[in-house]
Length: 422
Image 1: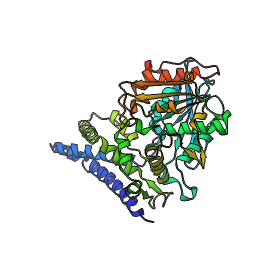
Image 2: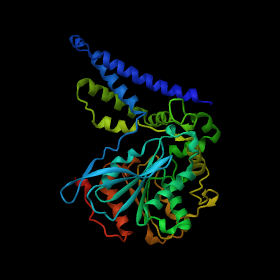
Image 3: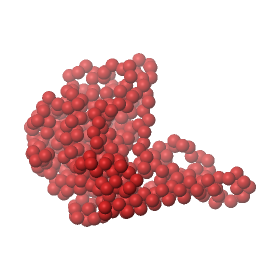
Image 4: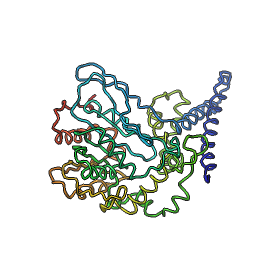
């Protein structure tokens, strides 16, 4: 059971820091201390409050917190999150809008499995709900999945997407965000040969590493620089005794978070320093901009070791998708077999994770697809997150994606609403 104690040590450190924060906040909040004119007391209480909340969020799955949307009929319609297809490593869920007729746009939003929960795409879901019947992949935290459930690598991920599309039925549309872009492309090609009737009508790939070598970034440099043996030795641990997945080999969420934070250490340090000052001055609130962002950003999940290793080795090092050599269960998946599914790529001009060129490479792989079924777009000023959330997504990218869906759908559709103006 090697590495169990290492995993538990990381969790112990998290709990200790959460306890230190709560203790500092409680001890410096006694009303009698208000008689002491020392700002250090307020600062310590503020530090404790920020510390406690931050470390507590690291092991909590965020809620979707989508309860209703306004309809064209002037009424608010309740939104119910329902599980359509349940699987050990991830579910297909649907945001069912009560009392609303079908929109004609049945969309599968493929969320990344890259350290954060699918709720990272909450704002994307909210922006699509007025115009689409939205489904999403809800990936599970590997620490909570018993070893008896077996492995989960990129081939299994691809087959999950195949099963989800079969469950959704015809006239569906796929929007894959970031990491799953190459696997969504592979799943579509798999269906083109195995079950053509289950293929989506359109496939939109947003900022994904279809060909990581097309444009170098820190992420691709890391993948090329480090060996698989180094990854296994330094990145992987076995889940500790506290969780249902005890003994499962994973890339821990806490370790991933430390890497995320290190990439922009100065920015995060300033954000937390400023938040402590705001709390001390009484200017912060429970759902202010800082808490809204970091409640999601700090909520991390473990991913299975085999998924992490196969992603690095087969997508980034061996370039199996980029060179059209990907296989699933020993069967070659030929992307050139995609002949009817319209494919659109979206990239951010300032994306430093999946740089421009990595995603649009998908169009060259679709050799069996006519030019009329291909489209690409670059949002000049958008970074990685801006291409699926925020102003760039709402004002520029979302309308183009919906127009692309409409152009490749025969089902009667409702008029598109301008959510940017709402």
